Length: 99
Image (cartoon, rainbow, N blue to C red; front, side, top):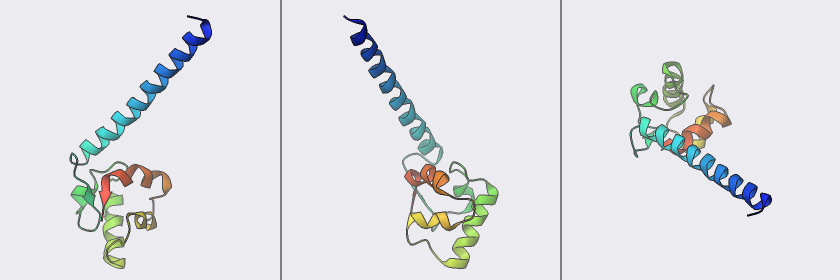
């Protein structure tokens, strides 16, 4: 095997390892949020919301206050209207929530 082929093989193995590590991290977050069950952001209480990554007691209360003032979320993306939930936080929450 040439050096180039060995290097290419090593890079492929490293890339596959990185992808599986990312998938494992997402699976762990989902498990922490209650297994395969999605959290309904229109009916969840503070105790359920704090199980989500990046959501502590204050953020959970902001979500509840927003829902009380504005009614149910029409789309999961509307969660970004809550102070403190931007695109990066939403990207972590999106696979774990539903309406």
